[in-house]
Each structure stands twice: as C-alpha cells, then as structure tokens.
Image (cartoon, rainbow, N blue to C red):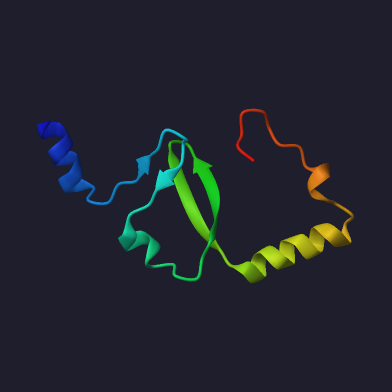
Length: 83
C-alpha cells in the first residue's frame, strides 16, 4: 500500500482503464481541451501519447481521402481492435 501512495504522490494524475479497455482521463486534463472530442493516439515504446485533433483537421483528412477515392471500406481494421 505504501508503494501505491508513493506512486500517487509522484504521479498525482492517473487514468483508470475500465473493464471495456477505455481510459478515464482526469478532469484537470480534459478541462485543458474544451473544444476537443478526438485525440490521435500514438504509442512510443512504453508510452501512450494523446494529441488533440480539431474538427477542421478531420475534415481536411476526410476531404483528401475522398479526393484520392479512398473510403472507410478501403481501410482494413486490424483484428482485435475496437471499431
């Protein structure tokens, strides 16, 4: 128990993974991004990084994919990954 308390003192903001593998972010973090609904998720070795994606950026990506003739049916979803 002491190790866990030491951990909380060192890292006061932690995210909880639910049984459905969703992360609950601390309110202090979410409040810093009031207009953001989507995050680009990146994995670098043993770290997860969330990068805010603004709606206009999403529109640009979808427009470019449409120009290239690419639809969501053209992009395979790896097995074991949530849709």
